[in-house]
Image (cartoon, rainbow, N blue to C red; front, side, top):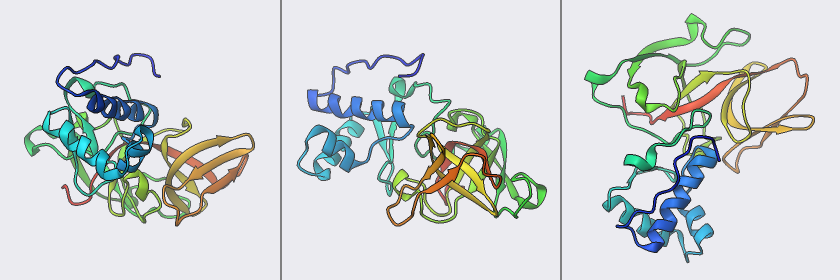
Length: 232
């Protein structure tokens, strides 16, 4: 548990089972930065199927303590006081953009990155977007357009815009942007005794192991938010 987290407050209007689901969601977001999938909720709480988890999630949504996003297995957002969790080192779930009048953070959008040049080189920036800074767990430096589906099961899809904060260090479990030779990739970070493993969130893709001291590897930053493709 991180310093500064508020204790889970029992919500009187929830049934005991709904409270279990609610607290499981909070713990998952606290631990990994992501809400659980329906299948994970079902497995953790002993439901017969993911549909049972879905019914409880819809009940929580009707009671105004969570919000569900269509089309994403992890599209769950805590509402109100429940969402006040310090996740400055973690990636939050997906968000929608606010009304144009309150957008105030200007972020460059990075498209394809040329080999050997800085990720924020001017030739990589296709345009600039104005966003509400409240969308992100900490201030990002740029948006990166996601290519491919290697992080599909983490709710990160082809064409999504990943908000990235420049960092040269990461913690286990964080979603990172890393440079491998001529390529830039988005993966989950795992430190090993002899290097780093970049973990895909899609069984169709292999994990990537980078041995310590590899000269063609660099950590570019950590993900601090995600904007679904088409929300602009």
